[in-house]
Length: 349
Ligand SMILES: Nc1ncnc2c1ncn2[C@@H]1O[C@H](COP(=O)(O)OP(=O)(O)OP(=O)(O)O)[C@@H](O)[C@H]1O
Ligand SMILES: [Mg+2]
Image (cartoon, rainbow, N blue to C red; front, side, top):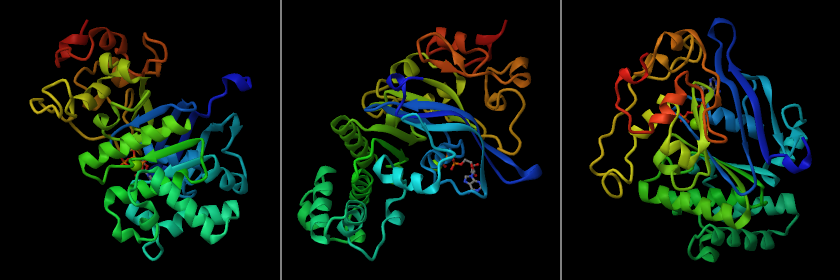
């Protein structure tokens, strides 16, 4: 691969396990994806599908043990990170790649002012004086649209609302101007209006700064507006990948369709989809220490046939460029679009 077609971030066939022996949980089973500068990849999936473990492995903060990377590669601008020494990883964290966590309150230290905590990075990694670093911290709060940033920079986390704390976390992550930002459910704990504001902010900052953004969520509704491409995870695999428009118009995996049915859609009945019928996906994700034979989704799939219990469907191209799905019947689903009848007849014969 030449420098020209090198991705900002490339994850290739990543495998992670937890535990040993019979209790071994295969948490990541060959995850591949990439992100380029200035684009947003949304990673979507139910609780336990491996989204955070993927993020932690990319950032080099996976707990090992109990976690174990058993295969694959993570490349940042072509540089392999999985074998890199901890000093190199530490340098890259913050400077080149940064992560925002779900729970801003527990990520902030209650005994220091918000500004002090942002300023630390400028002091320790840019060698700035305390005073200059605080000025930069206030600029960062202003960047993430916190009103009265000059005053508020001196306040403590408990004086910030949930939305403002999450903005402060974004400011902290962006302080050293990383090229890649991974946001792991950055707004899950917040109410819907604030969630939308946080998404909008991340989207604006991405555009202004050209940051590559990985947006992790279990809520398709949240990322609909901002994602360029979407990767859908199930049981530690990416089961579908497409640009956002293609994924909505022609989902190729029944699981993706299930996720779409379980959130209100704007076009159902005005904003918020007040008239929409929400259908949660029946059943639960599999135990990762006993992933079903064949397609891991088959026990929950209304369309499952014999082949689905026998053979693992590979992730493969299913029509549009870059549209990949891991379902034996993906071509049929793609051809039918999202409004096919929810019966098993569709795929018989
Ligand atoms: N430190 C750990 N020790 C053991 N198992 C772990 C550990 N961290 C994660 N796992 C397991 O790995 C699997 C994937 O977890 P992960 O946190 O990546 O899920 P997720 O997709 O981020 O879910 P959520 O939407 O709830 O955040 C889960 O089954 C989880 O129990
Ligand atoms: Mg998670």
